[in-house]
Amino acid sequence: MKTIDKFVQEVRKSKKIAVISHKKPDGDAASSLIALALILNKMGKQVIAFTKTDIHENFPFLPGLLFTREDLNPEEFDLIILLDYNVLMRGEFDKELLGSKTPFFVIDHHPPHLDSEIESAYIDTTAASTTEVLYDVARMLDIGIDRQIATCLLTGLVTDTNSFQNQNTTTKTLQIASDLLNFGGNLQKIVRSTYKVKPVKNWQVLGRALTGLRSIPKYGLAYTVLTNDDLKKYEASKSETEEISNFLILTLKDAKIIMVLIEEEPGFIKVSMRTRDPKINLTEIAKVFGGGGHRGASGFSINGSFSRAAESVPDIINS
Image 1: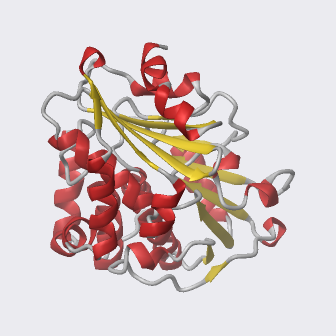
Image 2: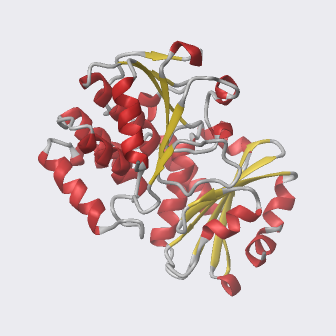
């Protein structure tokens, strides 16, 4: 039995289903969560979306969730579906899921992690986003895609391809985007809300990142840093800091690799990497430090002094 067929079988026989995404959900994770909840609701399932994040603060144009909760008891459900991640520790409810007897299934487009505890998964690493995978799932489930679902699925495509500018954009991605527009997906609202209209603090944190921009021509590298004080001062969210990486890789002329070092907490640094060179595989760099992602967009975390981390950027690339 194909994995997607197994997933469809599990969904059809389940009555009460929980859907969960990863910590600090980005556009793809947030829209996947809502899209799948809407799809399952159309099937007549009792579905509850679990999140500890106010999704609509960063994505106010997305449809509202009918039922959300922050407290998860896995044993209440027939099936739990994890979206846009495949390692339990990256989710908001990893402690609750460990040791649970309730079956859970992953829908994702990230390469599976070697240490993943996940046994049942439908992962398509050729997909540009998890919503692209969910589009295939919706067709397999024979669910009609309405305007709300179309807008959600299109949001994941737009945000994970940086408005179809990244190298993960394929002919299939564009064909699905075309289908979603025909189903009523609102591309203009997505792009305007996600990329165009920003509060002052968003532009300020970008300005701070640009001020600290450094380059190492030997490696074709450009990098910048954001301290924990910067994050607090500008109230910067994960989606806002990721936009900096995307902006830089599309606009810097001579940079093959972009790195943004973010001090999420004192002594804990998140490194976000981007490349537009198809010959460079950032996943290999990220794996050295226990991270992951895609060839063109990966990341990892390191512990230690922020100043030392910034000084070690050339060593990271050399590795």
